[in-house]
Length: 339
Image 1 (cartoon, helix red, strand yellow):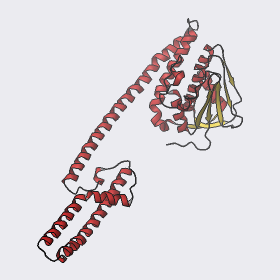
Image 2 (cartoon, rainbow, N blue to C red; image 1 turned 45 degrees about the vertical axis):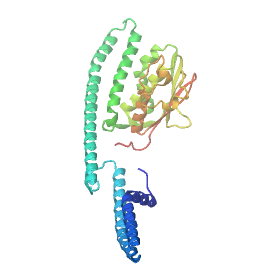
Image 3 (cartoon, rainbow, N blue to C red; image 1 turned 120 degrees about the vertical axis):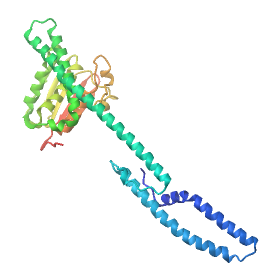
Image 4 (spheres, rainbow, N blue to C red; image 1 turned 60 degrees about the vertical axis):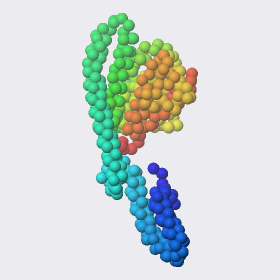
């Protein structure tokens, strides 16, 4: 709601009182006309108009004051996030009561819609949470079969697709828990090298399958204050993307020499088009690469940014088509802020 000047409020009130002004003008004109026709002294209509005008001016400015107060009260209610209907100015007449009745009906409809949407969201969350946990049982069984049958035909392909399926299930759980992630955080001071190598080990299946892709890990000295589970989730998402879009070459993990608190995961993949780069962290955005041969959900980088933001970290991305991509994760220092 825009701010209104006193002059604009005055003009608005005058427009509201337009009929009253017209009525007073016509009454005064009729009084002067009758006085003129009967050749009566003109002092009579003049004094009458002065008296009526004085009384009318008092009522006019009193009404204008009430008008400004009502306008101010409504603007204050508009600025509040949660406006209670009981805080609205009391209706002055039947028309105001009608407007109040309409507002109450609209508010009831809004609350009903919000309640219905909340129930649908809760049902969907409960279903997908249950599904995510149930799907882990057959996935664990397949993982066991894979371990017990080292000579299984096409074992590498099977292992890679199984890992992707497990990661998609974890992504669903991460997405569902994102809103209440603060309740699941357990911040610790962890060595960067161990944290990265543990994540690399979990995605090693993807690197093994990519015969023309090598992995280079630099000296990852120092520690990081973070949550192990959620930070590992981000690392695995970034590493998976690196392998997915890098058919040959290398993936390199190192600390930026100029910024020691910056972990860089760099690849020599297909890169990202400049027009897609500003939107890669948007929810559901897949870009040209995601709509091509390597199908994408558009949730991976979105979840990475949301998780890292809640952990107090930062993430940025630099990329050149045909050259590669570098994902930069900045560490938090000091206390981890919990909601």
